[in-house]
Length: 327
Image 1 (cartoon, rainbow, N blue to C red):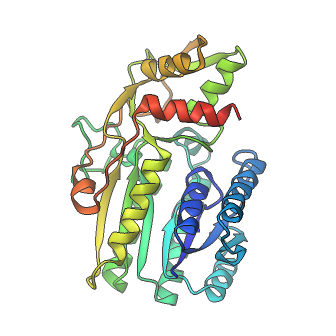
Image 2: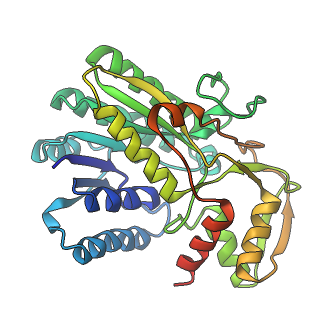
């Protein structure tokens, strides 16, 4: 049985990943600080759902350890690492969101860069050699070349959040070079699905349409995103952890995890409307600073090396999300 540390493991992606890992026979240690970025009760519900799934599958509660604390707290991290013999790490914990990072860049740098450095230091001290670092498609900025490939230059981030994620990738490379730690840096493209954070567009728009309230519609609706369904992202993360543990050589690589198809803001709203059977009330607003015009993942490298293959269409994913949302 492998012990996997999932930082940020009570959040949308982290809890879904943790549930899958524990159901597949791993021991999972979760770190989360349950901060007030959004209602902490949502994260507590996510953890309750993981424990319920374990109970339904007769899995011992000893296989899931929740450690409440902050990755900026070095003493807390030292205790977690000393008490749990960790084999590999999926490092999801971060301050998320492009727009809030513009309002409080120092917090984003503290959590996303200093916090990541603290995790890497614990890897060095505890001889942990397998780390999946969760990065973001935001590192590509307003890349003119489409689709975005891992070999494209990423020297022009347009938000503090994006620059912290690029910094994290560089830190990982430094620790790979100096200490022979293997890294898979995973650039996520707009993840959605059950348990999605309430501040994210699909969740927010669904709620507002159902309540017959206006939705904030930034720009002319032509901006587009490569939406990735949660189950496909979790598949990609797990394939990355398998790649990290295969063979003896030490590795460092970057992988796009996207949905393989872009959807415009206008079309996204239409699909939600069609699924709900209800029209949205639109509040047209100017484009927000820090927002990129489009994201579009070239996933050929991830397909070739990891065997990553997203299966969920946007329409199917929205249908699954709405079904969960209405529960």
